[in-house]
Amino acid sequence: MTKVTLEDIKKAQETIKDIVKKTDILESTKLSVMTGANVYYKCENLQKTGSFKIRGACNKIANLTDEEKANGVIASSAGNHAQGVALGAKMNGIEATIVMPQTAPLAKVTATKSYGANVILEGLVYDDAYAKAVEVQKETGATFLHPFNDEYVIAGQGTIGLEIFEQMNNKVDTILCPIGGGGIIAGVAIAAKALNPNVKIIGVQTANIPSMYESMKAGKVTTAFNATSVADGISVKTVGEITFDIAKDLVDEVILVDEGEISESLLFLMENQKVVSEGSGAVTTAAILSGKYKPKKDENVVCIISGGNIDINTLNRVIAIGLAQSGRRFSFSTDIKDKPGGLGELTRIIGALDANIITANLSSTNEIGVLNAHMTLETFDKEHIERIKKAVNEAGFIIE
Image (spheres, rainbow, N blue to C red):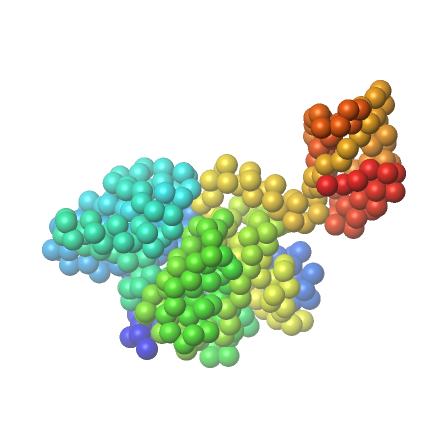
């Protein structure tokens, strides 16, 4: 077991108190009504640099020796640790180099550069960037700042747990926390379990990269990668040895959510909570919305929104996926007769069912007298889509 204690986390809180924000806790009325529980959000998306990562980064930098600071610092990051390190280094007059995956959102790359850091792009996921950072560190002698497998970083992230208990007047039953490399859940779990051994700590990962889930199942650190994820902030193929040792003792369960569920949750947060989250920050909402975590009646549940650094172009794509996932948008193709009023027959059916046509594109087919119509509709829900499909099919159109 790691040597990180509640006292270390309290010390970190004192160290970083003038740098980080004490972020708000907001009640989710919609989720509370849906579940019968009392669901709250810890909004680290409103933190400086847009993510919780500044907590651990600044605590680590504050504990560097003068010699380590003089050598400059290097870090690998999917984007949020990068910004925390870059800002912390700038505030201390330290030269910083950050290696980020080539898939890192442009917003995170631009923000990191804006704090004065030198940015190197390498690979598809965090682990690729880490390998490159180790290589550069050997060449330059810079001090490596690990984003999660470090006791000072874990202690810094654990300050979130202290704030949650303080803001909730100790009335906390369950904390849902995203997992990438495990830094945030390790710190939060140490703080929370020390304050209340009965509190449940539930980790949430993307099914595309279920590294902590597979590690917990195997009883040892296990690498796992299926595909890239919209939750870039938790796209870590191999969790830390230190974080795993903490998680296996203190984390009650790890839940996996898929890409559609994450996209739907991003949309839910914007519409119902007026909160812009990044993919990794929305996984805790996805765990509840998908029914994979079902809170008990009157259970006090805190979902950590770990960050809000999402690229606008990515957000646009995610909204489209979220709308489709929740039954609010429906696209289909069907053949129509190539004659006056041919398209009108189809649109009359759709209009009669109160669906709004967003786009309608016609193209020729291999058959004379037949056109293909591709349509995208604005719909109410999945039941509405089924009624549309039934009516269109009954009118003789075959939906593809």
